[in-house]
Image (cartoon, rainbow, N blue to C red; front, side, top):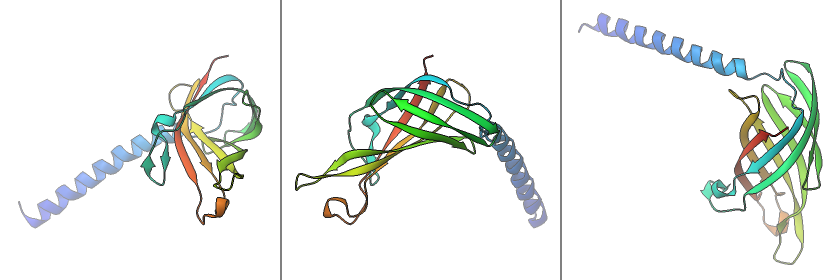
Length: 166
């Protein structure tokens, strides 16, 4: 094949890939808005079987909770609300670019060798693509740098699922 034909074939291939990627991203973009508020009762599951700390998998307890969520959306880009968990905490919730965020503090999350413990910040991030009653994402809990006298953050990241039950 000549050099010109090779360049033409490469250009056609790149154009085809660009179209395929663009169509694929259009489907994702359509699902990445905050047009629908979350309201109701949900089962929240943090899968400890796939927990990671510093890119290493290790077992943590799988945690299941019931969340009652109320929220409102002012635009397709902006939703806010509140989550009340049967674990005894409540926190604000917000949606930006199709991702829901719930952040709260966990007192005594990281036990220290001296018998004390430091607070962790738990951050749930989740979204849905196909099923408006099922969300997936991450449960990421981080302790403060310097907590327990160690100059790095203790972080545990687990897969997260939220399923509407009412």
